[in-house]
Image 1: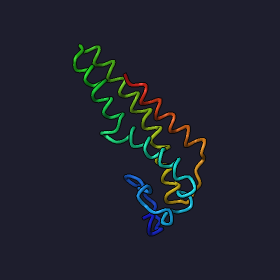
Image 2: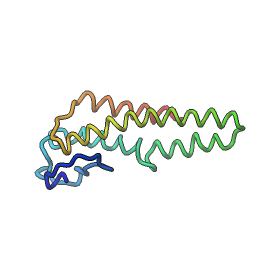
Image 3: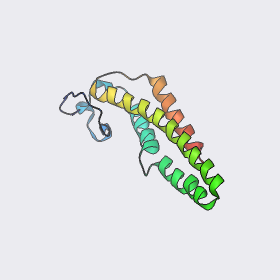
Length: 129
């Protein structure tokens, strides 16, 4: 869609893989902040992909601990996963909206907001023991 400069009105399942495209093929909104958008996309993947850092840390850390404990410990850890998931969803939605707007709507990104989203994703990953 991005290469052909086509527009649509639905939410995409994924994002433009602008890292593999030549700079000339990118819309200005991606080209102007490519390094920052690459970092944002990488952070998005780490918190949103099933085998990203968040998914793996949740599975190997929290879920494994929950299965080893009693019912009360399991409930506490499952509640922790619910809170993490809600926080992840809020951050990921903002990230993919930023990437979508730059990719398909030609909107410039707010650099401070993108940096803040990356920091939030890193904080989320660090919050898992």
